[in-house]
Length: 344
Image 1: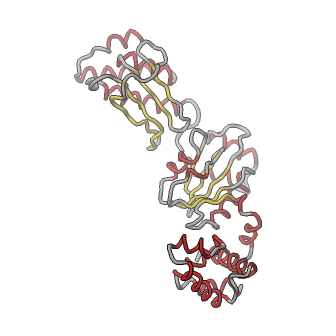
Image 2: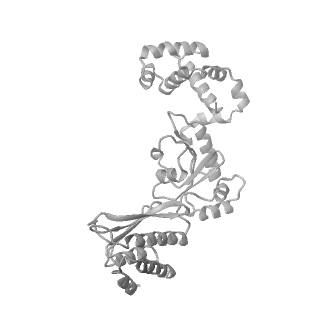
Image 3: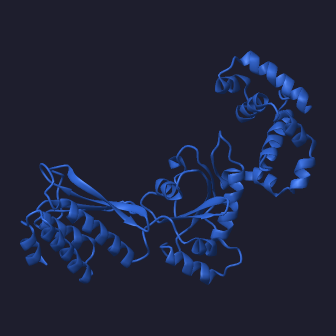
């Protein structure tokens, strides 16, 4: 391998040179080398620092032409290439060269990216975020047995006995992007199941969700229970609170268990349904219920507090409750939440 690298390191930029680059990496693949060996061989071939980074683990390899790990970067990456697996970008490869790229650098990085993807796929579960929906459904199914669930989790790449947290997501963004953001450097898998996306992770950072994402986060219990809790939490999300952890709902989670016909028949919920015909009234009530303060509600609505106070008085009359009374405010909050759970 070293002799071949030496012979190829000074090739002219012609078709024959590109073909020999392909042969070089084919030889490495037949020898079933690992990622450090790939980076080391590439650095020797290109006679500059070569780098490999995988998004899922955050692992970065930088090798110098002498075969050692490279020190601090002495030159910026002169050319980069994305590593793709199953149509998903899973990492990046690059060369750190002073000045302009060499003629064969593009061919070298193209083959290096393919080789890295092959190694990642060969040695263990694929590092892509998107997963086989059938495996994910097996993990979250209440009807599955523990042995089948354990096998499915292993095939998805999760360590044995790792706590699994399930996230239910509604968003126009790709699930793989959301998954990599909320669980950087740790195992995470995603799949789209009918009307909602599902993310399986060993840990979730709720502060890393992008804007315009609604997400319910389940507990790290049995995956099928975590999935049920995540879907429940998703139902409680609003524009003000787009991400909700099931554990933060407390007794509010009981509202999700009330039969829909009972919720629709409740007088307070009926009154909220009528109020919803006026979006301004609904926004005002929502702001007041969220803050419990006329002035804070006015600040969030960018209105004068006296205008909000007058509107709240009218809203209270429409609902048949005194919103200045703690009991009346509690009734309004519960009715507003129950009405939202109807999905209207």
